[in-house]
Length: 486
Ligand SMILES: *[C@@H]1O[C@H](CO)[C@@H](O)[C@H](O)[C@H]1NC(C)=O
Ligand SMILES: *[C@@H]1O[C@H](CO)[C@@H](O)[C@H](O)[C@H]1NC(C)=O
Ligand SMILES: *[C@@H]1O[C@H](CO)[C@@H](O)[C@H](O)[C@H]1NC(C)=O
Image 1: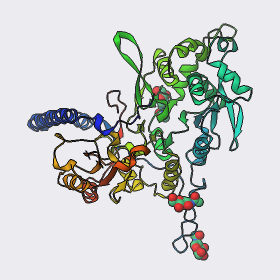
Image 2: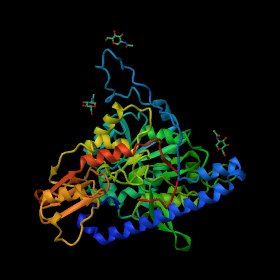
Image 3: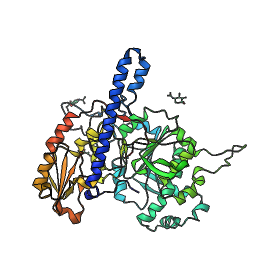
Image 4: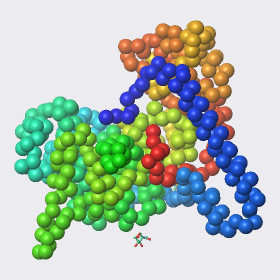
């Protein structure tokens, strides 16, 4: 269930793009009209408007511009006369480890996962999380962390009736099972994982859950959590549509791969059990209560969101700060990916996990890391044309009819992109298609079997001009929303 499955360029017909553009123009028109009317109206009234009402008007934006402060420490070795000790990456000297007692971080994995990925994650994203809680489907040790077999927390009587647990038994006896069998077990981990996190660190204010392909920008996550009260039942992440609830509505859950956060109050409500007159628990644990629901659903993140919903807690949708997409597909410079701080990304490539973690450590952390800053990591605006690369893999525009001259050659395609103000990059397919891309995107290597056909390039001059004209003056910390979705 990945929203990040790639669509080929040709799967985005021109008319659909046109339709979107028309809608966008209409939206822009209506917004401008509304602002105009409001301005006319309020200027007539401005002398009567109270300061409070004015504040309300300016607060209509869907973001906060909080002035936040990094919790990371200043690098100690910076010394004007000697910069040999400057590189802080590879160490945890600057990481704010003291926060870890009240922010419990939990990593979910499986014995069936690629060990390379787990190792890479633990050497980059989770490198400095000394009290990381690692949950899996088999007990083991990894890089100094105990790995908890979280499925052992499910009642044996229930497990015995679920065919998927044959795979689990095989794992316990030292046999290998394939990734598909591991994935079928994965959904059973979510609820016991939350219960275990509470047991391991009952005093935490926040519980943060990741998978081994989630990249987390800790600095931004810590900055954001400082702005919220953990006594509120908060459940934050990237919204994804889940189970049906009342009146034909769908429940939104936090997509697991993008990472999610639960406040202490949310966890307390979720794991609370009915208690009898002697203080003994008489109600089932949340894991037991939802065992059948999990069995009938595809996905544990969906059931977790549903259980929270049934206990009165709705998702605070934090897209695009929590992002279900990988770095190379992010459309930089669109309405959602520029001045917004980046908190998480999904499906990170191994090289990017290490690369980004090092890059972040070298970066000056005075300001939060915005999408606009990530362009520097990708070097967009400086990239030479690349063979075997596809910029349109995540959606591009192929103008019709296919007899247009830009479809004839790479040179014509490059020139035609250059001639359009909005075209930031292009991909030429020797089968006779020129694809224009409107947003700033890295794109990805083409499938090996067709790599010879594709060449991608960026209009660097236009990209640099656009960036110079669109510097971010303040961060846009997006307010929770379930209508703003990827
Ligand atoms: C900076 O480096 C110089 C030369 O290595 C050294 O003498 C000095 O003590 C250092 N200063 C600090 C504050 O570390
Ligand atoms: C730190 O990061 C830089 C740039 O990514 C890299 O060249 C260097 O090898 C890294 N150093 C360590 C100690 O990891
Ligand atoms: C957080 O909210 C709770 C409940 O509304 C309140 O009692 C508490 O004082 C708040 N915390 C802070 C730091 O204001």
